[in-house]
Image (cartoon, rainbow, N blue to C red; front, side):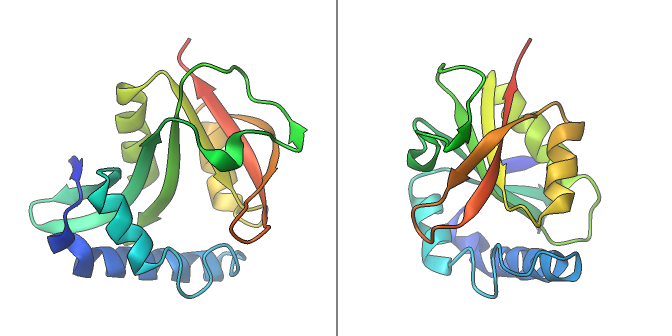
Length: 162
């Protein structure tokens, strides 16, 4: 099941994102989140503005993600490629799994697709798992962007309901 995250979820969220960072390191993507991203302050802000969601079963949180509505500043002007359209969209950020349940990405994406017909997501070039998951769920690779916060390069993907 999916619900909005609350501040009371923070201890479990720390475990989810710790495990997600470990998985990234083990699969050849040690730099996208490093040892500290997403920062606790970022997660608190996401909760505060109501855009962080958790995948849960009873009291156990096993996954988390952001669904942000409106313009994502990093997405305004890809330096390579182009978005599929200019319609209003949702952006998926910070998908993380505790690693105890299979299909967190699918569960999050299905839920997001039920909320809006136009979704965008990005990932690091070393994140082969996310690249595969995006294309397997109907997202189209559209080009590249630079993240303003740290100057890193990301591959961008776009999904539109047909």
